Image (cartoon, rainbow over all chains, first blue to last red; front, side):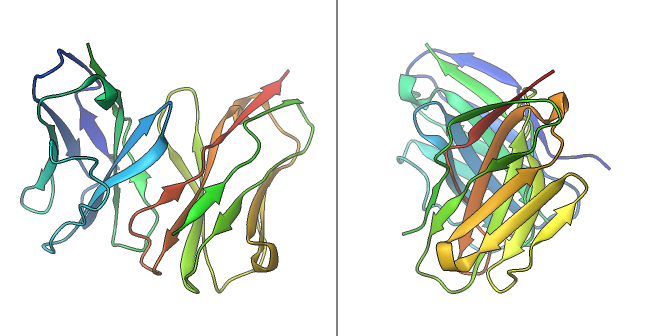
Length: 113
Length: 115
């Protein structure tokens, strides 16, 4: 079946602009995760959604970062007033339920100029 | 706080050699999960294995095997008879609290298999 999809695959934006990154999880998966992969910081957890529960936002690096998950499916990660240090690959993952293995999408490479 | 250490930054082997990737973890929880993921040059993370803290049995899947030892807090990964297609970055990861929510990743080991 279809895996996790993310769009866009690449995004170049100017410093100070807002960006939205989209994630479509595997159908039927109730848990959705966002991670960030950068050269200096490796793979970092950002936020986690499980069903209709309040998301775990403990990994968000600043209040410029936010995420929504509509209808228990598609998720959008928003970064406001982007900074150069936000440049990274943003990875989305989903799992059938919290506790199961996470399946990752191809990522969105964000470059802030 | 949880931590995963992959001390080997880069490893190069010649095809058909066996190679072991080391992973050492730290956690205060008694219930946790350990994972290995592969990230080939294409960039997409591929799930390889999940192991819970109560199951110390070693596992073998084809040319892949995993050695989990709680006494040394290690979860090492061995590829037998390596192939060029095994070239990738391999990440070890840990999830505490028994819920496998957020994963804490190691820094990864870049494996290059030369023909």
